[in-house]
Length: 110
Length: 222
Image 1 (cartoon, rainbow over the protein chains, first blue to last red):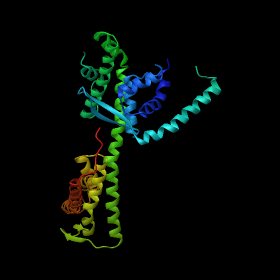
Image 2 (image 1 turned 30 degrees about the vertical axis):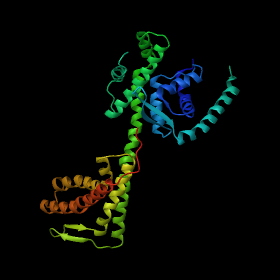
Image 3 (image 1 turned 120 degrees about the horizontal axis):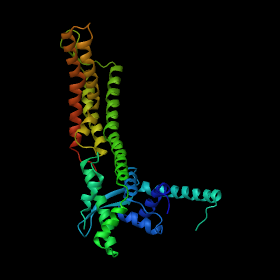
């Protein structure tokens, strides 16, 4: 299991990446990240929602209340152009970091 | 099925945020927990077991509370800057800039002597322009999603700022400075308040009110 501090740094990229495919509710965002990471990345409420609020405030995504078929209201987050623009440099940054770690710490893919 | 909204409210405790914001946060978090619990039940857990696991998976509520408040405060502070302080500074600089230009161009004001030297001083071109400046401040504030008193504060800031200066100076002149003749100063201050605070304030207010009647393109509903 990855430590909390390390996971926190990855969260922004993870959230932006899953929202790139389309709008999702907070729960679905967490679920999708967990599925795609094979269960390695799991964010608690305390990690996920404050991050979503911060990203919304930066104008990277937008949350809108929607009422589903069951009549329940859910807040649906969608990626905004500013957030989409952040994805490319963020991916490049993480790729650089992994390359550097590979060289320094001999980290390789499992 | 547990009442997740009540559970969230109980664990979050009182947040020092806007009431609507607290309600939205509680609803969103409760929705998350409810969905998680339903999924666990669908996966074969009993309701009681699913509720237990959901509670365990929620994480540290104290951290959540701190992080949510900090994230929302960040937003509130930046909103305050956009809704109040930036428009206020714009109206302040434009209005006093124009006044400085008029004085520099030696445009003579209308003066009405109340007493010997103290007078009501009216720069008519300035007063005529003030509603437009107030409207600009009101527009900038409304564009940043401000409503009510915030819009008026931003639009009338030049008059309010000078009013605050007078409020500080007046008691000093009346009660502290021993060399002034009180009646004379009081009348003078009243004349200056009328010239630089009340009349400009009314002119700015008219601008804000008229601009407020206009519909803005749209505001994003969260």
